[in-house]
Image (cartoon, rainbow, N blue to C red; front, side):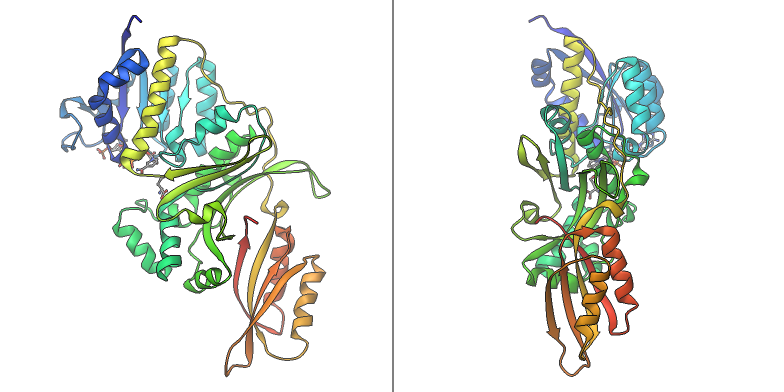
Length: 434
Ligand code: NDP
Ligand code: HSE
């Protein structure tokens, strides 16, 4: 085969991910050229601080002039993160005909439509395998491998740092604060930890997954989000006693039309109890996993490192090889279709079950009063357990419901809190995965 002309690659960012992309591109140049049919020449690396010497990044390639670098490139790799100037640089690259590889979930979740539309208009391609779950191949399976199937549900652990925190609370009995301290020392949390612990990072990834799974635009604001900051050591201990574990889940689900409204999709992030036997329960430490349910393919599980410089660089390099091959072979880009354009439904339409723990007065008639609150909101109780507290005039009730709409369940919780015989609503947590 005749070798194609060398392809010029511009790298924007030389941090955790970018420095590893640079190293792998240089170290594996011959092998990558053989796979692509063209040499991949790294022509420059744009950073903010050009003075700082970075391990495994040739200083002579460092520049602060990202715009000139983009103009000279065939393929642009954006691993700088943030919204601006990343957005403008990607638009500049696409508009000048370059394919772009990005790992930037925050940008895709907020400006994805603009970027994908631009790519389609100019016949360029935007690759983003690294944007969700780091090294795990999940974008390509949803975008290509399952393109002939109907995906009904995607449920994932897509934030490694919160999974680490919850795992340490579960296995070592740490408090949330202790586990967060550990995660901080290990460098797992984002510079702004609220992006992780309040579920923002997972919500961005959920929006991207739902967009691909359901061929539907998913504005980030429509993703329901609860973080892990209210999870207590007590809840963790009780979950374990019940044969379950608490995980921060990103759930993207197709919801059929019913009397409450039309067909749509629900995209949500919250901590939930899942059975210890569920495949996602065994995802430990900072690992990620995505569980997909498709009509024909059935259940699929994707597991691996959701972050880390070199791990994420693997996904970036995979996209870069695809982009380079397209250059060599020619042909149009792969456009994602949002033809389904399903409405993104509010959390109220979601059907799930709750586990509610109450401290109640230990006296006759209390159980009946509480059961009445559930029945008034058409919520059926599945199990009730009572744990007596010695020497106190209250007792603890742990109630698990059957599936009901989230709207009904939250009305039950509100009314229970205002019920005389209820001293305290100790814990409310959703239950998933049964
Ligand atoms: P870092 O913060 O480690 O690195 C960012 C790099 O971009 C730095 O080299 C920085 O320059 C450069 N940069 C930032 N702003 C500018 C700017 N305005 N102009 C020029 N250069 C700039 O980020 P990561 O490598 O961790 O992440 C990169 C992307 O990958 C993000 O979108 C992130 O969400 C995504 N990602 C990261 C993962 C991870 O494990 N780290 C996992 C999955 C995705 P300087 O060195 O001078 O500061
Ligand atoms: N903060 C993210 C996480 C990094 O903890 O998973 C990878 O996107």
